[in-house]
Amino acid sequence: MRPYYQQINPTFGEWTWNENPSDQLLSSQLAYLHYLNAQWINEIIEFRQGFTRVSIVWKSPDRQNQFIREIEGLELIPVPLTSKVWQVPVCYDPMFGDDLIHLAEEKKISPSKIIELHTTPLYRIHFYGFLPGFFYLNGLDPLLYTPRKSMPGASVQPGSVALGGSQTGIYPKESPGGWHILGRTPLSLFDRQKQPPVWAKPGERIQFIPIDVQQYHDWKLSQPQFVEQ
Amino acid sequence: MTQELGKVQLLRCPPGTSFQDEGRKSGANFGIPPAGAMDLQSYLWANHLLQNPPQSVSLEFSQPGLQIAFDQETFISLAGGQAQVFVNEQLIENPSLIGIAPGDRLKIGAFQKGQYFYLCIAGGFVTETYLESGSDFDSVTESASKKTGEILFYKSRLKILDQKAKVKWNSSWFESPIIEVHPGPDWSLLTSGQQLELKSRTFQLSKNRSRMGIQLEELFVNKLPDLPTNPVFPGTVQLTPSGKIIVLMRDAGVTGGYPRILQLTEESINQLAQKKTGDSISFQLI
Image (tube, rainbow over all chains, first blue to last red; front, side, top):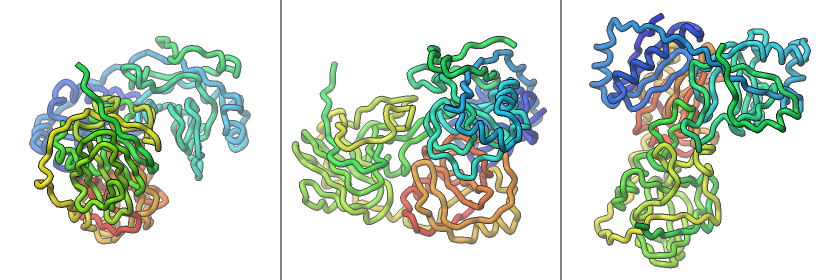
């Protein structure tokens, strides 16, 4: 799997993978990100990662031109993905999961089936975006695909675990949001006092572990534990 | 060695007033937007007038009514739009650079031109920095904006500046309706008819605007597909399925899922920031 480079303007371009997000795509993407870090970091103002693109802002047009010449024929060996799985506790009680009951009715399945479908997969972290500490995950069960709300909710609480479209994720801070809220985690997703401010890295996986209201209130740790799987 | 800190009090602070500098050059990999002055050019100019160190934090405001009390002799500079500026109720004719005496009160009156203003103080405001920037952003700095009553500190530095040398306040650079853009990463998803329409139509700025983005008033009918979430930057123009055109600004999230049809140049981001609701613009591809 190999991306092609699209020059968008004299100091900006993107590596493009023309396929759906997957572990294979991420493995390939991580190899190209490592290559940028190792070989080109001094020529770059910044680069950003999305599901199917890596966007690069160059310090000058010359540097981008040189890059385009030098990557001709470049094909990197994908980076094997880590076996690290973060176990993220989530309380799916309706007191936190505002939209759980409604979603179950809409899909004509029980709330417990929704929880089961949501806690079964291991989700792959692809990158951070949207808000500080918000990670984009791949792996939602297609049965849970749900269009976003037509009117975004005014305020979603920090730690809210939600789904929208083919995505699921956790709101790190209070924010307006158009996703359907299933529950809440007692963990902290972003802490500016820590270096780095987040505990998980792209390529690692997330597993949602159901907990009850008592466990939620008693939860002491701000970071989840992890297993190798 | 401790340097003496000067202080000013915000007697009245309109909503949306914040500390801003050039913004963060790193942190996007944690989902942290760059933030920074909406109109970077005016920020740099205000800092330059005082010969402040680069990256000195300025006070950005976008609504009239700001009132500040000073406790010692200093200089301040103002850049961005044009507004009525008073010191102790006296209208200041050219407020680019103002000498301040102890006890002076500054008041910002009605805006005549522009939308964003930068107030710098000799020596620079002192604030906590994160990733080498003092730009306010929720969850990254202590607060997202300043409040009435708040006291701000600055590195007291009294260097006599030549007030005669001050340049005339000029805002003509942002008055042109032509916004220069590059094609965005998803430009090729548009039909040639749509591309032509984008280049030839006039759009108005809607009242839906913030430091995150500016929505345009007119709808642009399209049938572009849903796309995977990918990187966006300040100046990225997004087109939503319902036809809304949104120009992302300094506080926008670092990734987005709507097609990215255009990318403003660095200069045109500053220019657009200074446009008001109802102003007309047209895109010119370069």
